[in-house]
Length: 197
Image 1 (cartoon, rainbow, N blue to C red):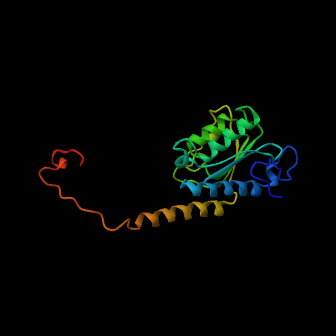
Image 2: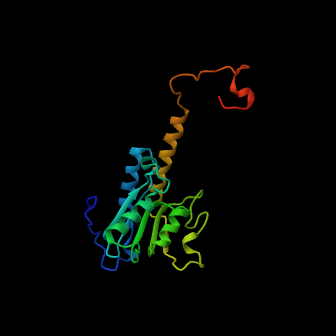
Image 3: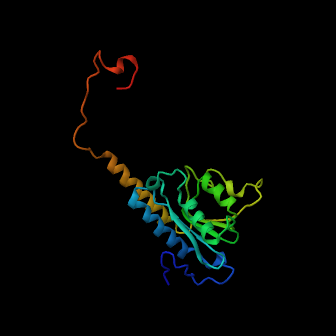
């Protein structure tokens, strides 16, 4: 059964949603969300928050470019939607499923929302804060430490990101409207006095 965008449909998980039931279907929803970020030029990362009974509580994708908001990461968008839906900032019993390992900001939001579990697809060796570069969510000094599951549909999650960045590099190499114009910096130029032309 494929749930609608906000249907709250269940994935056939029993009450008390057990991690052993698998996270392929919820990761599929997160991947769908990630693809939604492509329309606005945002990095394709998607997330869903799943309640203890398997209900979709919130979903989101990166919207930094779309919203002009540096905090509009997929995880934060999904956590905000879930908190709004349940009417509380405390998301105990819920699981965040995200296509890319969360950064430090998102790891902090996961801990502060009291999520029970974070499941992610691709590792992020450059900014990952759930085991790759840092392990912010399992720091023993914190009062809440969620369970972590990594590598769910990792190849698919990683390929979406790799394709996005390959396309951006290709676009950056294309000439835009012909050769750039060259302006001579003569004595009257502001560049002579260290100013910006």
